[in-house]
Length: 190
Image (cartoon, rainbow, N blue to C red; front, side, top):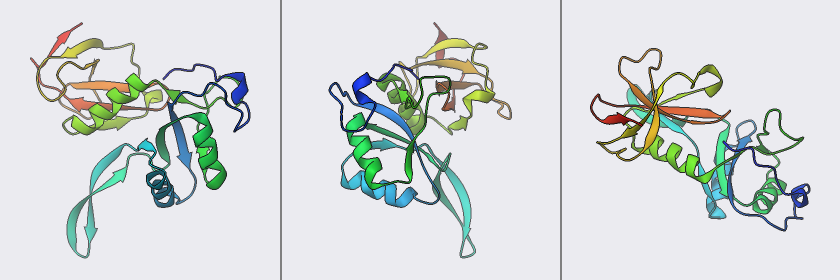
């Protein structure tokens, strides 16, 4: 994730001069996921929430349902002004801020990094999400995937605890990572 500073004109909502769209890392409070999603769809805003399949007992039957990996985590692709307008209407929607950055500097993710993260999340076999603060990415080799649905993508080869196979991983700095199973022979070292 890039920690590129916001233009000083963006200190107060509505005063943006240069305001390109970016992926903002957001969170919503309490149990406001559904109203937030409904509002984003109504405004036709692009968003992403990492989801996983879980098995739940519904009426005595075991069914698979999608649920958010982190209940309050939400990525929104928009400009700062539009997100501020959204926040004014939805007080339960908040920015996540850069640790150690300038005061009240919203976390943003480069579009290319977010595109890779979404692609891995949606096309990988059995994705595993993990807290990047618990991972040491200096270990592992950079790889390029040469076969399968992730062909041409670059990642870091890593052994995830509790998994028997090798995983290709993509991380969004200070936020979340995703790992997908990759077979020997489906990648080359960069």
